[in-house]
Amino acid sequence: MQSKKTLHKAGFTLLEVLVVVVIAVTVTMFSVPAYKKSQARAQYMTASGVLIELATATQMLMESYPNLVISSAAFNTNETTDAAEPTNSTAAKWMRGQNYLAKVNFNSNGTYMGYTYSFSTQGTAACGDECTKERAIACMANESHMIDVYQCAWISMDDGLLHNLEN
Image 1 (spheres, one colour):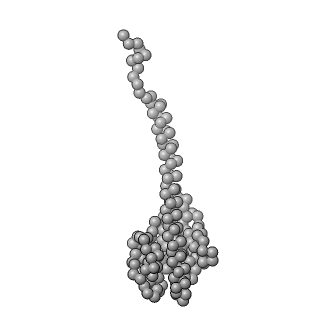
Image 2 (image 1 turned 45 degrees about the vertical axis):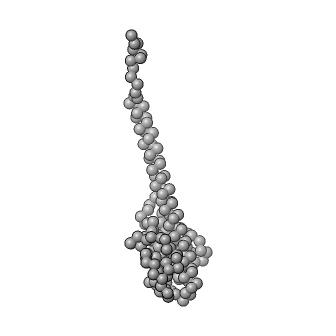
Image 3 (image 1 turned 135 degrees about the vertical axis):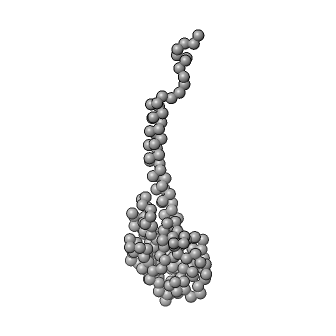
């Protein structure tokens, strides 16, 4: 005959299951925001690489056409037509024709990775009200991401460095 101790069925008590659930929820509470933050940072780094390339293209444009005046123009074209003599409206086409930003696929609304881009040969690039900086040769702005990412970044005409404005 079996004793009473061997008749006990194997399984988990309600308290044990509750502890496991609480631990799983706690881990999720901390890991999901950290994951989203790291995704937003990676997106910003990719977008800032495009900004640096846009600033380089603008500097090359200024060297090739020193009399060209572009106060602030959005870089939002997907066309690859090479404009022989760039104007304010065809400067982005000239940049694409010179293979600057050729592989960047902007959305139909002119954004890439959630950022809008602008450039200027006069140092007056403006990417919205919150992102208008003096002496900016190129800028990018993102108003949709609010998870500890930079909403505005620009390349200065003076030092050629990437500057940013934190949310």
